[in-house]
Length: 150
Image 1 (cartoon, rainbow, N blue to C red):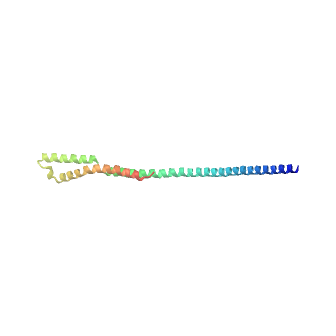
Image 2: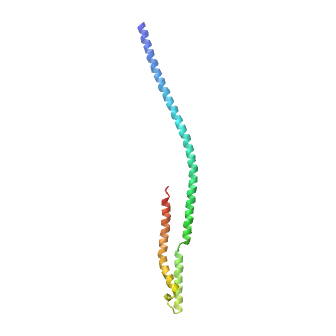
Image 3: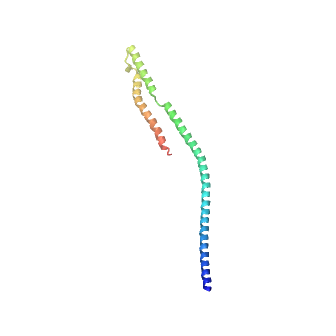
């Protein structure tokens, strides 16, 4: 009987060890889950704070960018108001024609009139310039857009 008690006692000890190991594993899993939960809750809270800050700053930055773009467009409009236009060249050509007609009526040669020669020379240069200015204006705006890295 003593042997039987010893066997039962050994079995009971073995069973207790297994149950304790089992409880340790279960407790460890629960502790790991609690730690993961804390990390996720903190990350979630921090994420919302950062997103709110980014949203607020994003609006502020967008307003600043729009203000800069608006200022640039105002400058380009000012430049376009000052730039030589095709209509001005047409007006100059009409003046040349009137000088030619008037000179002919008076029996003069238009080339003998100093303003005629100067205006004719300026008009030749201006026609080339109008095309260059339009190209410059478009290129300038495209360069501006490229320089904004977004």
